[in-house]
Image (cartoon, rainbow, N blue to C red; front, side, top):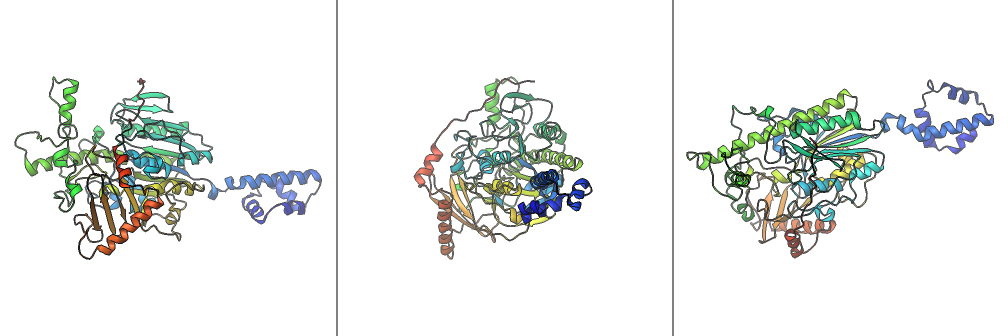
Length: 564
């Protein structure tokens, strides 16, 4: 025994004695008690001790690596999640998504680095800003470099089984996943019906039995139940197309909201005074929604090309109305009600599918040791400023939902008001899994915030959007947001600045740039922008930034012959 004790550290002995079930291992206990010291028993005891040292952690449930379910919708606005108690909460509750917030922590100030689908997804995967990971535009930005480091690859290299199911929208075949089934038709966007999926980078399957939201739910639960290696911890990315444009809900929700008008946001009739870039947009509900968006049926007898042209009318500001008597504000409100109801019907489908996942985890005793995250690739305009779509650094699209449940560690009904960015997701997930985040990730783990521990707080977040003019003529811009102020610079073919005091102007209507009394605040924020640009290696010249916008790299999608 002295020999054995001499080769074990205090920590190792503590682990052994903490984890040995002496009733289960009564023969070992007798050996220890009777101090039988013949050479055969000494060797046996040494072997068993070493076995305990290397396996005690796996026997201790407290130290079992957590499973991770990362749920992401597309274009899901904070205002359309009732847990945030925003202006649509009473009209369109999301009870299943809310279960995650009630069981864990709701993050109130989570933001993205580039408010558009592909770049946000790339930032989440890599923990790096768009100009570093290389995927900074959807339109003319090429495809995601799948050879680079991502958090699923790091998890995979540390014993996790990984899977991604649903919307991908990064062009190249997913890497870092043991299993993948991702949407590839419609330019990688996927479709709501007759969705084309690429499975494991090889087999192309057309799913025509279910709405895409239901199909993704079915595939995710099928993988969890029948395909995964149940001896390993898992990380599943469970990703929906909904509620992305063209907002086609599952037919089971068609009657939802049919007997009511939904409320209008306070800024529905914004006139964009003092905000030149905003005034030149092409994402107004009144002027830039097309017939397909609002589910009008084309006339019979049109060719495929003619049907496409008929459906797209409105994209570029062309006037149209479903009937001659519907004009002006009545027409704008009619378009809004058609849009918002279909959008929220899509959300209802997502909420139902989130409930299926939560129920499965509970019923299969996976709930306690599974981290469940709900987020979106960015926010979305639901009539705020009279708009749909995203892209801007204004709050409705810049801000994104984020809630996380981990029963072992995170207190139920917790609220966090600190500044978080989507590049923080990757290092945080790795940190929660007990894996040290790679040093080259630009994001910062907020694990301590989740566990209510002392931590250093971020004092500002940095944003940069590049794409122009497609699709909605949003000026490329960068900016900084602190807990109170926001400074934005539009630089492509104008030189315009905007400053907002968010404490006194939450809707960002009053541009304070160059107004009396704000020169020092502006100066401080410009200095902060410079520091953050240097920190994140985005300190190139404006001319170089403009060249990034002008660059056109064709995206490549493989839409092979489908199996029915």
